[in-house]
Amino acid sequence: MEYFEIGEHGFFAERKGLEKTKAFFSVTHEAMLYETEGLYWLDKNKLDEVYSRYTMNKLKILKNKDWGMEWIKEKIRKNLLSFVNLSYQSKEKWHEEIKQSMADAVENSLKKKKISILALGDVGGTVLTALKLLGGDIIEEIGIWDISPSTCKRWEYEMNQTAYPWEYDVLPDVKILKEEELFDCDVFIFCASKGIPPLSTTETDVRMAQFHANREIIRKYAKMARQDSFRGLFAVVSDPVDPLCKEVFLASNEREDGQLDGRGLRPEQIQGYGLGVMNSRAAYYAKKDDRYAQFLTEGRAFGPHGNDLVIADSIENYNDSLSKALTKLAVEANLKTREAGFKPYIAPALSSAAISILLTLRGQWHYSSNFLGGIFMGCKNRTGIAGLEMESLALPESLYKRLEKAYRGLEQIQ
Image 1: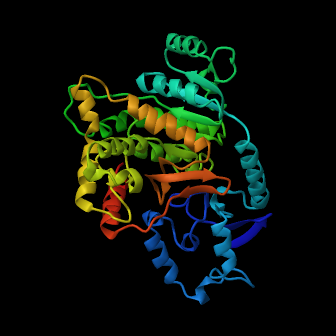
Image 2: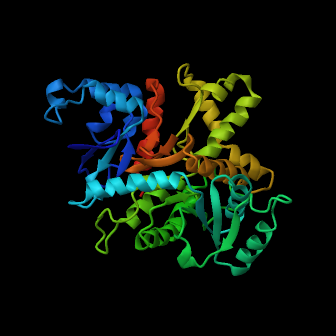
Image 3: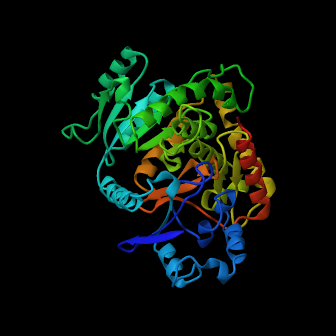
């Protein structure tokens, strides 16, 4: 393992497998430097256990430094330590590539972003509206493309007539794109979908029914991203977001012979936006029933946007039965909207997609699904100059077992 610095920022670099390790991430615990990433990264107790297994003799990585010294702990405290997976870097020029990437990250953090939205159905149109109204501080322009030219014309017409009086440049402009221009942006938002179940369905989790239809669509755009050497954020909004994210990663990194080469989208470039609404649904019920009230200040959401969702009513004062009951309410909330005769897309488009994407761009904590040991898992996270940072808390063992079940379920999806 190598180590180098750019100013105060430290970087550990090592060649690791493409299928299990991100290309670049923020190191928030010493144990993240030792073993392959996995679900245990979300549990500070498990990270501490991994760290304690290593003796000082095994911690030597440099001639005059070791992993147990205070200098690493200090950089972690200051959020000044990152890991670089050399499998995604050129062999001879990776130092220069990292320096350029860091310079680009600093520059990008200071400028407004160009957004592209694919498909303007119920979800895409709602996401567009929300980003137009809420994103003026961080969005320069929103590009749109839909298979229906008249739909694009309608939304361009309506959105560009949405403005504050006398302040006509406060909100971002909306521009119709050609399909081949979709990746000329900082953020690509995938809202295309097929096989949406009818309102009459009684299935609690209709998302997996859409997987096989949507995976072929998303593979097309993953390969377009590879061809265009896209280096922005590929945001997956269509259901089911977690397995579709994995499909994007695999498709964009496949050579013609099916082997992964790491020349497509990097794992941390892909995020799935489905967990935000599940958290908001849990909060909705917590406001209505005092039994769940502690969720509003102490709760967390984890896992996929579906039946394997994990809601914790509290981390420090975790109640397993109450948490499972609140989880059930959140999972079945979409059925309540369907029973009223409507498709449950407005809250997901706003809470999971628009609001969460804006928080992502602002470098703030939010809920989304990210690459974690080969699958995409939903949790609280943020992305900054040091890379992707997933929240790690001291989790009760009974809660961690629920996360394991969700994680294994995601691993089994093919």
